Amino acid sequence: MRLTADYHTHTLYSHGEGRIKDNIEAAIGQGLSEIAIADHGPKSQSIRRFGVKKAETLLEIKKKIDEYNEYYPEINILAAVEANIINLDGEIDVPVEVLKQLDKVLVGFHLFIRPGDWKSLWGIIVNNAIIGKLRFNNDKIRKMNTELMIKVMDNYEVDIITHPGYQVDIDTKVLATEAAKRNVALEINAKHGFLTEEFLKVAAQEGVKFSLGSDAHTPQQVGEVTPALELVQRLGIPPCSSYKCSIISK
Ligand SMILES: [Zn+2]
Ligand SMILES: [Zn+2]
Image (cartoon, helix red, strand yellow):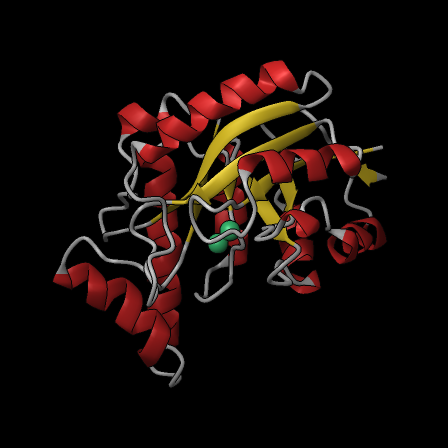
C-alpha cells in the first residue's frame, strides 16, 4: 500500500514555506499522481497573518495551477483550500462562488482565527481553548463541536474534514456516521498525529472514507505520511483511490 495523492499541502500563499512549483516538484519526486494546494482560508490568524490574503486569492492560485497542469503532465494538480469555520451557523471563510471553482474543499477546526462575531468567538474559541481545557462543560462542548461540523457539511460540499479531534473535542462516532452519509472523508493527518488509533477504529466501523494528508508546510514534507500509512495498514483499513474518497491505494 502506498500514497498516491496528497490533498493537504500549504505554500507561501498561507503558512507554508515553499512555492506552488516546489510542492509540485516534491510530489513528483515522491511518485505521487495527484497533489492539491490547500492553503489556509483568509480568516486564519496568528501574530503574523497565516491565511491567504483574501478568498479571491484562491482563484489566483487556481490560475497558476492551470498553467502548471500544462507544464507538468506527469501529475494532476488540484486547487483546494483548508477553510475555517467562522461562526456557530456553520459558515466558513470562503464564499460559495469561490468554492465552486476549486477542485477540493477541505475544512478544519482552527482556534487561531478571526471569528465572525462575538458569540462565535465565545462559542468556538473560548469554549475549546480555555473552558474545555479546564475540564468544564466537556460534554456540552463536544456536542457543540460535532453539531457545528455537521452544519458545515450541510451548508457546503465538503470533500475532507482535516485533522478531526485536533484542538477540539469531537464525537468520533457521530461525526464518522454523518460524514459517511454525505460522502465526506475524514483526514488522517500526518503532521498532527491525528486520527489516533482509537479514533480510527471507531470511525472505520461507520464506513467513513479516510484521506491521508501530509499537511506539508515545507516542500520536503509533501507526501510524507509514513506513520499514518503504517497505522492504516496495521488496522486493516482498506485502500481506496476514487476522487472523492481516500487517497491510499495499492
Ligand atoms: Zn489545519
Ligand atoms: Zn493544514
